[in-house]
Length: 384
Image (cartoon, rainbow, N blue to C red; front, side):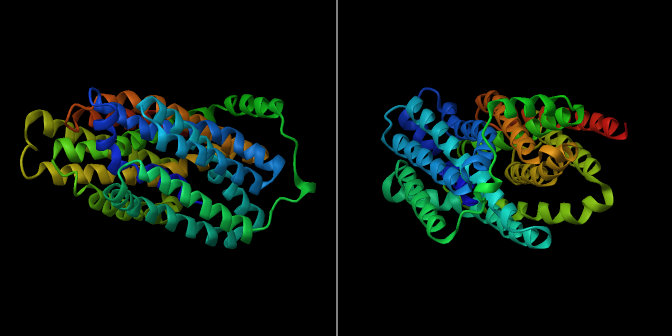
């Protein structure tokens, strides 16, 4: 279940070129929307799946989400236009929000303390491994069946995982612990969350960080293909970067207790701003045109995934600190708003792609620099 979101995003990356050639030959950058439309649907769905799982139970929301996810996959498989594929991907994202949130709730229902940390460590292994192998799996499926076969693979994956969950995992939320679903409760929660200045600032920084990450994921295949002529090697490079970037979580665990969450976030965003500035300067002056160009791009690409690993968890923790009394709903609101806002920011940055990494580097420099400035305001709020 934890693999659903990563698989749904990363397995599509090798297909971007073929989708653009078949469905958007006049505007190939529009193929990026296959990634961001899924994330948009997931961001919207995240707002509701937490409260729904508190009302109807965890398994009902997961299985219901699977029905929506499979329907979206089938529609994308059959679609004869990019617009229909994008609509289907939004539907898939809505469905994927079920396992994204409800599975975490299952873990919270069954475990606490060190046992919960142990289970979550297995989840982090999945988060590290799936992005590493999903592009290779997607490339293999494309080679065998064409890009539409990836959607058939999503259907099979969802059916197997949901059948396994249905047979092996009892419902963890007893009827006595269920709460009625109320639009008024969600509305009141949203109002309370946005009344806390620190949480609002965290959502803004989280949105900028997500935007940098989503832009990178949705455009990286095009950069490998058009900028460096390495489309065939892309799944291998991306997999290696995904594996190495898993070290960011280990690094954060070692330094965050000593430095604090806000300082780690600040230092990371400063480093990303500086590295993006160096890439921009190298491209515009021609200093990187040559054998250093591709290696430096790989370092910069890896730095973005490291930035995500060193900031997203800390930002969520900062945002949740004042929300202990509505932790579940607060987490849904923060995740939903930040994810949806990030898509709005990421789409125009991705559309600016001109065959070089320059527009992307400029967009990510702006995101990281703004995040750095706003994080300093979070420090001020925290001191008050």
